[in-house]
Length: 253
Length: 253
View (cartoon, rainbow over the protein chains, first blue to last red):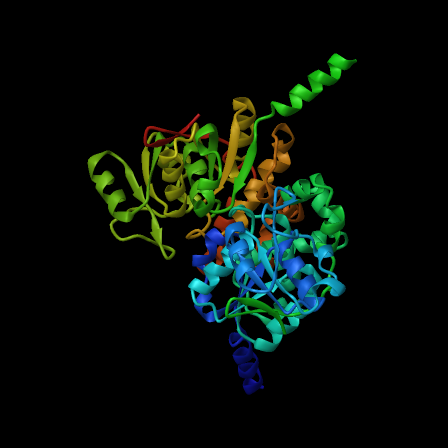
């Protein structure tokens, strides 16, 4: 009996740790070097990335400026994409909507995508020597959870936020991951508790929650007439592909 | 009728803004210079400050180190207080518990109190020229709300957090303020929505919520046998005094 308790105790203490980082400005508080970092930019970068890779894109190159996007677009056979204020950015060919990347268009192609908040966080995680970097969004929630369980490593759920300001939707996705697989991790992190508490309030209807809570991104995107995009980005497993960063590229695994 | 709508519209747009800053590391994202900043350090700094001033302390001088506390204690007639790891810090006379400062002891006296997270945030707010700085805690929740309504200025609810890590209890207090008086402000701030959502989940029993959510501070303080302190710090209006910072001192107003 005593051995049985010892075994349980050992199992408890060897669970990997999980943290939620609510803003890139807080990333240096967490043990990046020993963790897998999940980049979360729900509206819309990581949702669109999941959609394009799920639909057969060869690779996605995330870049943090329109100029860099144009530069790479000239060097390699690729599609350049990115928006500023709800319009395709000058010099680029496509926008940030997941619906612009159906299989018949994107299959086998490389997409060079400008995103500001998500790409910045991704580069920060790489600079701090994260063990691995993947991207997460509701459309690939199950794939993210399965990957994290299989790796059995420490995890940082990294919210891309908006110019460092905490946002509801990225926090909700962190909460969704914790709701699904949190019990497999050791969680001593108030941000994680806050995220999963909010997710449990919201999960019956994430879209309605965002609307009622007057989420800043909901306002911004619905002002651009992008409710259909928002609904896609808040729906689980519509593009259920694992997305892993490797040598400058995001790839389906 | 048209004039009536115009009036309503004008009233709407002239509401002051309210923001919740979940960590001192995020303070520079908010308009500090044009706002009243509420310093929130629920366990236990701002709760103990409210208790001591409510019980008649003449003033509280918040300092950010034990050395500074000792230095000031030698210069002026005062009581020095502060803890490290749950024990009264070496060289100081009293601790951080609100129960150490009943009226019969503290009335008319000046308390020099070391707190790390709260004092740091207070100094940051002063350095960024906040319009005014007050402290907030559940024991003086009603006083804080009445003050903010009377001032009719922009507000930043500043969570002291723990070494910049977001914590549950300071966020809950921000949520409590928003739950009470949020409708008098213009709130375009996801952190505020997250705080008030969590508060509404928690408010029936804040102590139980902290326990169930395994809040990091709850663990730490209850490990020191301080459940009674935690209960005091989570109870509304037990020390319902407005606490305003003026020229180096926290004063009851």
